[in-house]
Image (cartoon, rainbow, N blue to C red; front, side, top):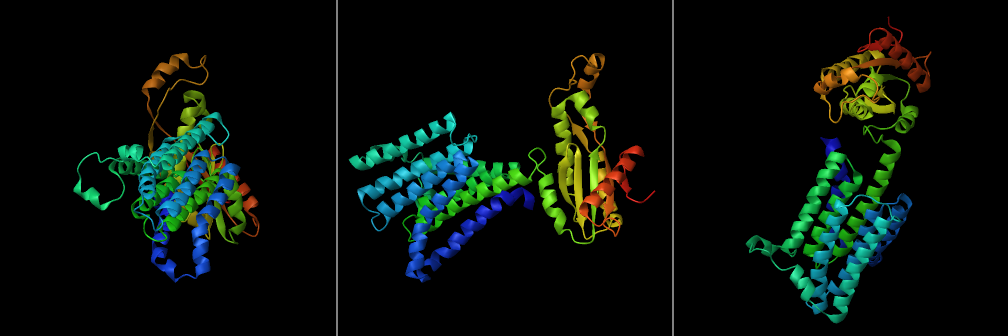
Length: 410
C-alpha cells in the first residue's frame, strides 16, 4: 500500500509543511521573511535549470505559469484586493491555473525543443498576451464570462474558486493522483501536489504569506518530482518497475558481513518469446516482477538482466532465506496468467498448424528456478556470492527447474 501511494507522499508532506509554517512566518526575522518572499523566484530558476537538463517540457510550462501567477498575486492582490485590477487578476488566474494544469496532466511528455513543445509554449504565451491585453484595457468581460456560475450551489459560496475552475482543478488533481498511484510516477504525483497548491492559492491568496508559501511549495514539488523521476530512470527498470542492476550494484557494498543473495530465472523464457512473441514475454517478466516486489523475509528484489532477477537478504543466511524463496517460487507457479494480444508465433513460417490451437489457450502458467548462496570466508565478496548463487541456479535448472537450490547443498 505504501509503495502504491509513495508518489503522493512527498508532495503531501511539503503541502502540510507549508500550512504548518503559515502562522509562524510572522515570528521570523525580517531578513528571513524577505527571503521567503523571494524564494519562489529562486525555486523557479532552479526548476527551469533542472527541466532543461532533463528535458521536462510539461514541468517547464508549469514552472513559468506558477512564477507568473506569484508575480501577479504579489503585484495586484497584496493589500489591494478591492481594485478592478485585482478583481481581473483573481478571475484570470482562476481560469488559467486550473485550465493549464489539466492540459499538462493530459499531455504526453515531448521534451522542450520539439515542435509539439514549441506549440505548447506558444499557446501559453498567447494566453498570457490575452491577460496582459485585458489588464492594459481593464476589460473584465472575458474573465467574467469564463468564471460565471454554472449552477446555483450554496456550498460553493464558501469557496473563491469559480465552479468551472473547480471542476477543471478537481479533474486534474484526481487524474494526476490516479496516474501517480497506478504508474508510480513522481511527475504525476508532483502534478497532484501542484493541483492542491493551486486550490489553496486560488481560495486564500488574500491571506498574508499564502502566495509565497504555496507558490514555493508547488515549485519545490515540481523540482523534486523531476529529480525523483530522473533517479528512477537511472536506477529503476522501466519494464518491470523493479530496481535495476545499477541500483543493485549500489546496494552490494553496504550489505555487511552476513547476507544471502538469490538469483531467479524464468523457466523456458525463450520458448515463451518464440511461441507467443516478445509482447507476451514482457507480460511474463512484469508478472514475475510484480510478485517479487512482495517477497517476504526482508528480501529486496532487483532485475538483473533479461529474464534474470536478484533478491538480497541482508543479515540472513541461505537457510534463512530459503523458506521465503520457496514461498515466492510457489506464488509464481500458482499464478495463472491470461495472455493479452496476438498469440501468433514470432516466426510466421513456424508452427502454422499449432497456431490455431494456441489462440484458444489464453491462460498459461510460469515457473522460476532459484539459486541462493550466502557470504562466508570462502565467499567474501558480493561478486563471489552472486557467482555461487548462479551455480546453484544452474543446479536447479539441471534438476528439473521450478525449484530452489542452495549453494553447497546436494
